[in-house]
Image (cartoon, rainbow, N blue to C red; front, side, top):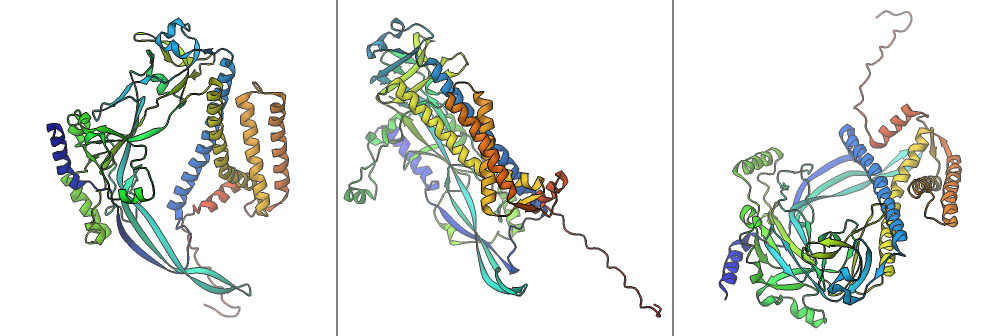
Length: 526
């Protein structure tokens, strides 16, 4: 074997004992709650936390919807401005693009001669014949869940028998495995026994090629790292193996029996190409080493002595120090471990709508700036016309708008009830509340369209649709408000606050009033 391969394999052998792709299960504490089931367990602190979370949600969703609508508008306006000014170039122009189009012009070009390389300097990873490299990070973390089982009890109320949940048993469960995100364990029921370190030395990132070319024409990194995510090409995972061949798996015979393609679309690279990984910043500072098994770089978590002692102390306080379970001896990762793998976008054929910019060695393809300072640059895998690329980008933007409009419905449900509470009424039926929700969303969208589009770049029919949506929404809201009844909280801001506190259970513990002394009967003295 090549000495480099021998060194790599010996390192893997030393480190692989700490790496595992399996998961671990542990059962947490069990709580018994006699009597009627109490929902939430809010109280003052829980209610405040729920109120803060919901308030952030009610602000974030409308903001994201506004951002999507604005981005969609800016994109369509940019497309409308440049659609009649695109210079269509022949594939032969890639040898000298400056001879085919002037500087700062917008061109369309397709080519099957794509070259370039990508690298991640933190890990010493370099891949040839690719346009973009994605570093994907996974974290070994505990995840808490809970189950609740209740009995069904009955009682008499107002002369009628009713059933309710009672004598509930709540059990906490913990599963440790690889996650695409970190989980804060501070609010777990047993945070010390299931502590999640939050280290993240190398977060997920993307690396565009710095030397990409279409034929002999350079492609600037800013076009590939488009701020509007207009670089669209399929991505596939990378695995470094001996001979750049897929290593056999125990389940290969099963896949062959069902005629599945072994390896899928994974790209295999020679492990010798990782010669720079041993001396990379990731290896030197955080002990990352390539362990294979799917193309992973692995870094074990090593707690300091003081951190370990503090963990034992908190486990003693919460009663989990001697809580040994079968899951503790099962092979799995350690909470705080990190593994990294890569995916690459390496199209063989591309179509480009871009501006002619100045590169390091002459004319190059970069972003085109419109009169409204919109940075336009589209790079798609395969052969497509410029107008097909515009249509695809417009559809992608529209899908985001539709998604955020859908997510806006729960916010509008809350807004509708808040408006009703402020007005001193409450809805008498679900249909009335649903109608009010649709009315609120219709008004919000109509106002947003009016502010964003400003009745420009739209046909007469679109103008009428904007106005009609607002009128219908206001009418629907008026109909919904007629199907209400007086609220016990009354109207006005003060009563609205009382309603808001009751919704989230933000109540201080009641103060018991002093008993009223009984008066002595007439004719008798105390």
